[in-house]
Image (tube, rainbow, N blue to C red):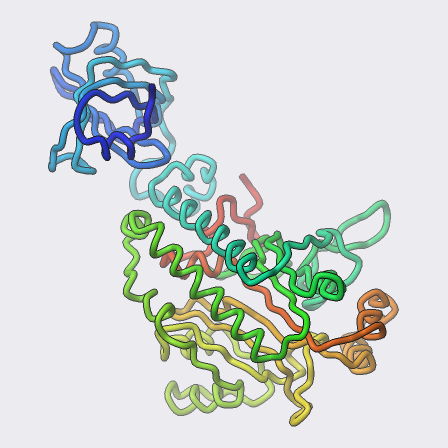
Length: 430
């Protein structure tokens, strides 16, 4: 019976049967050292010429990196081995002799992206993918715990929600439609039935950006909740991030270690309350502490967000943005109609916006006016405006870019490593 490498290590001694792939190989005159990997861990296996058959010995000398095999042997502790244990092999069965693997040490990022289907096997990417799985589960668990229903909206949509310049056009039987930028306009109608809804789904933004923090296809964790005010939306976002980090710290210690992530940089976000500052205060802070002058009314660029993030060891929530730089559905502040009840969660360490959220505008006349300001035809939004005509209520929601959160938690240099197959302005393969 085969067991995983992690199970074999926990067993610590005695006979074990494992299967996996060759991660490293070193051949000597009368011994072959193979480091074997599976999805759980790696372990060193030692094949001695006098302990196996001639065929097994010959096979062990032919295997290359990524050859697949089964081995049987005795496991024992050996502190010199990569994970502190090694297997003295008594039986070896090669399932497939791999060809020369195209990825060597110290390869360029572009070559690794060209071979992403193979680079997924690396310890780095395997660790990221495990943490990614934990994060997706944690998001689902958080919303379910808070009484939210999972709700799906169409990927093919007839309207824009986040600006026409970032839309992917789609030829839909001769009609021009779009790939979803967000589920929001379709989720808001659902709260009148379910009150609390969430979803994790792909979103698409045709941003002509080549930065280390942008993807054209990414996973979007979104929520919409009835009877909620602006403060409630911020509270949900903060609690979600805290819950996700706690789950990763609890379940992925080994993966964070492999990634050489300094977990002390994550712990403040679990323990501390996130600072909440207005956009106007953010401009003052940037001017006073960072010597950066931003004119009121201008959106915060990457450089300003990074400077701001360096002043905090947790995400900072920036609120009350100018209406002119935010989406048409955000509610005006009754005390100052120049700003909206919209917020961005700016991640620490220069990871940019993690969450964007708002209380939604209840007045259909204001929504129509904002749409016209953006040269949009209000007639295309009839279904959305209907939600303000039949039992409108205070409500709001947010969207979180899951890859941004993964990149920050894992301490990645580039968001492309936060997703199995990244899609960017220049990359669409493999």
